Image (cartoon, rainbow, N blue to C red; front, side, top):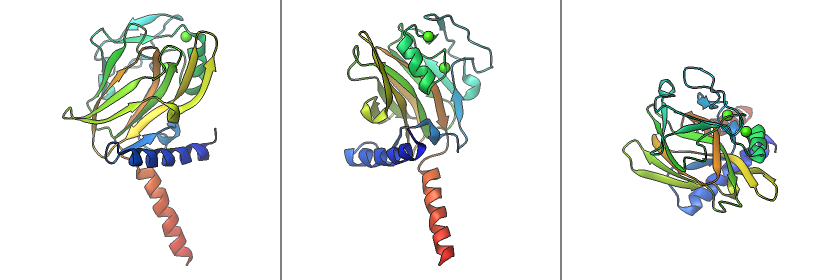
Length: 227
Ligand SMILES: [Ca+2]
Ligand SMILES: [Ca+2]
């Protein structure tokens, strides 16, 4: 899909969120291309925060210490114990190849509820989501809270976020980039899932619609100069 079309989808998504009466100052992000122009952190889960490789055989998992990414300003915790995983489903692997980074993702089949907690200012986040709709027709849900613990938004991985699909008799894997940006700092994101993985977490302190608004202002300024 072209970047310009996806950029249009970002704007359309913003309008839909506004009309749906969701969180104030919220804009959903449907493409990872949102992040490269702004300062941001990317976690591929192929290594820990110190850069030590996490090498997993296919279908293997490994316990993730709560402080694995402390130096990057983020922690991943689960009551059942957080894990890195190399998912064994070949269609999930194909989705990771398309929109994420093989081989690792989070949080494994052992973990169906986990929380991402930021210790640095964050106003925009996004990640690849891969969900088996045959097992979970609704998709994972994201509960987004501010730094005081107040709920600021709830997002569900539905069709507006889909970039593609791989399917066979047992799996129909929808995949796509799910993200959002808010006018307040994001303190934590609690995620519930049953048959999904998440990869390539991106986050930034820069609030949207900064880059889009700046582009608009630049065009306006150029138009004025031409008069
Ligand atoms: Ca795999
Ligand atoms: Ca990865």
